[in-house]
Structures are given as structure tokens and as C-alpha cells.
Length: 506
Image 1 (cartoon, rainbow, N blue to C red):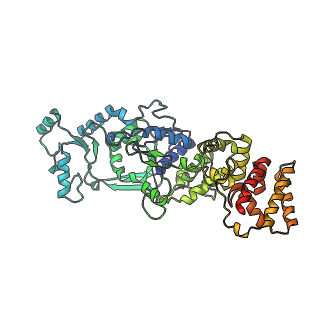
Image 2: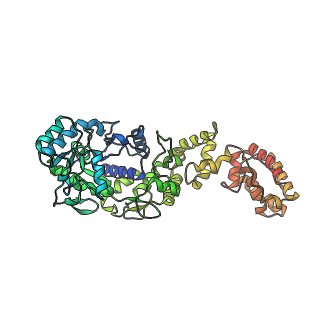
Image 3: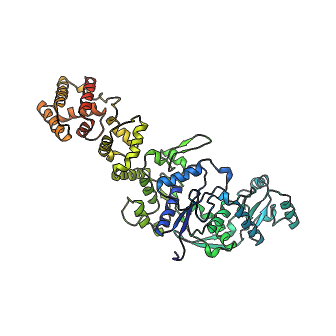
């Protein structure tokens, strides 16, 4: 990397729907590279295809990046010196470059209608507009000059296409893949400017990357087939010396086979592929996201970073600061990375365990309110979180693991115990209730030996009495240490629950 070049990278999503985790990883790798080199991370919204524009999608992109902690230095919301940051607002700049390409002999006007092109597709299998057939189609290369001028002056709809050379070889050095070479004769004449005056991705991305002084481009490997068009545009527009360095990232693959991970795979296998919930404004369909499922942003980012990259050690848990420090393009894999949802859950579990209660409490408070617990002692919430934290895969598991601390159990799992119940066990718990009522110090360290001594005196087995006791307090065979539960519930509540539950065992 040239030490002279100021690092400026960009993430350029289209506002067409939910943000796939592959898109977030692209943003993350751009961000890590920029921050490591004291550079700028730019968010540019590629909204030139107005037919696919979805209301609310741009705001959703901003919210996703904010949740992940990947904040752009420049964006439509925080503009800098290289705006506008929406391609639709840069529309006037594109036609002049398309016209320049025509004047220099690198592009041409195409007047073919959608119906005419559809007819060609019916006549020729795998039809593509290229050097093989362009002179048989309706464009400024095949038509007389006067006819071209007439059509233009009369305002006939037209596109502008790049004129791909027939027999050239173009190459570039990819930061991940090394030398990559293409034969231009195998690439069709891509549309650069559409009939509505909007550029296609091919023209817009080159013009904007040049205008915004982008130095390095990280994008998915699905864009590799487009590289020869972009290489030639940089050359044809006279900007070859300023062309950014490229890195084509490996695909994120479906977990049970080859091919790019899609939303359908997530639906089929039962996991999200979007960073956050996305509600389609037209259909109303809700697609679940990692955030709403209970993933911590730190865990989500950590997991994404290791999909196709590692630092060469066995370390798996990384903070954002560590990722910025250790990230290197050389350690990005050339081959695709299979998404492993079980591993993603492991990352989240580890992050929950190692995150302070203070950081988790806002989400826990929200979870309690969502479940109807509007008031709860903050000290109790903190203590309960400490008690169950190691059992949480998702933050949303907190309610399942700890609801009994805040509301009475709705049901009691007594069916397996009732057949073995007897009067001795009833008497034992009646005695325990009486002992607990007399107890002046309500601490687990005091209550546990007291309870176990009473079991020893009774001559019954520990398991015969400990499990029913747990069920009386929590409703089932789960939860943290039962004497910690006893302490946290408090004397009055424990006695009340025992008295209420005891008749259910009879």
C-alpha cells in the first residue's frame, strides 16, 4: 500500500431491504482497514435503481451500522467534503462521463426497445449484447450517423453501452487473490446509462469512487465478473493512475452445502441472516434479525470478523479495538466461509458471560417491561443477572431462565414426583416452613446447611427433597443454585410459595 495515499474506503449498499450479514461483514472489513490506517470510512447509498428503492431501507442501514459500532466518518447523515452521498443526488454528473466515453469511441447509444431485446433472447439462447452481434442491433454503431442524430433529437429512449474490446486482456492485482486476468471478448457490452438518465452500477461506482477519492475497495467476490468493465472505465475516463486497490472478499456460504448464504437458507434452517428485524413495507412480512433475537453487537461483529479472516493464532474473542489492531488483508481467506449458527451462538454466550451487568441491564430492563414487569428492585435484577448470566445464549433467554424471580410460577412440574410422595415428605416441608418463619438471618450460607441438616435428621435421601423444594420455588427442574434462589426471593416470598405449592404434591 502506498504510504502517500490517504486511506478512504466506502460501503455502498442499495436501499432495497434488510441488511444481510454478508453486507455487514463488507462494511466491517472496510471499517477495520480504514481505522487501522487512520483513514476515513464512507457510507454511500447506491439508489440509482429507483424501481428497487424501498422506503425506510436507508434509515435501516444507518441503524444497523450504529448498532454494530461501525460509524461512518462521512454519510448522507454526516456529510463531508465529497457529497452528495446518495447516488440519486449525483445524477447530473453521470451523463457527461457517458457522453465523454461516446466521443472518445469507448461507448455508444443503443436504441433497442425492451420488446426487441426480448425477441433476441427468444431467438438466441444465452443472448448477450456484445461485439458478436452489436452491428445487427439498433445502436449508433450500426445505424447511419444521420439516423442516430435524428433519434436523439426526437428524444427516442436510449441507453448508453460500453464498447467492450474484442480481443484484449485486462488484469489487476487483487489484495486477496493476487493477479486476476480477464478476456474482454467474453464480457458483454454493459449498459452504463439507462433510458431514464440514471447510471447503472458500473458507471456510477467508477465515477463516484473517483470523485470521492476512494483509495481501497473491499467488496464481495460476486463483483469479480464486473471487474473488467470497471478496469476499462477507469482507463477510458483517463483515471487509470488513480484507480483504487481492490480486495474481493470470499462469500459467506450456507452451512449445509455450497453456494452463497441467502435469506431462504435462514428461513429453512431456522436462523436470521439480517443484522436487525426488517419489516417489508409492502407485504408487511417481518424477517427476524440478530439484534432482536438477543445477540450483543460485540458478539455479532466478533463472529462476522472471523468469517473468512483470522489473526493466525487460536484467539477467537476480539473486541473492536483488537480487531482494528490485528486486522490484515493478508489473513483474509480466498475461499468461502461456511456460516455456523451454533458457533455464532457460542460467540454470543461468551460475550454475555464476559460483559458487565451494567452494560447488559438496559436490555434486561426492556425485556422485563416487555413481559409485564414494570417495577422491580434494581439490586434484585443485578443479583439475578449475575446468577443466570452463564446460562444465557441470548439475552432473551433471561426471561426463560429467571422469570420466576419476578412473577409466580404459572405451572408446577409435579407429575413425576406425586407417585412417590408420602406423609413424611409433607411433614418435612411443613417443618421447613416453620423453621423458615423463625429464621432471622436470610442468607444462602445459613439456609443451606440448616435445610440439609434437617434432611439428614429425617433419614430421607437428599434428591427426594431437594427437587420438590426447587419446584415449589421456580415451578420446574431448572434455575441456578436453589439456595441462592431462596436468598434472592426473600423470606416472605419463599414461605408463601412453599405454602401455595405443597398441596399440589399430595
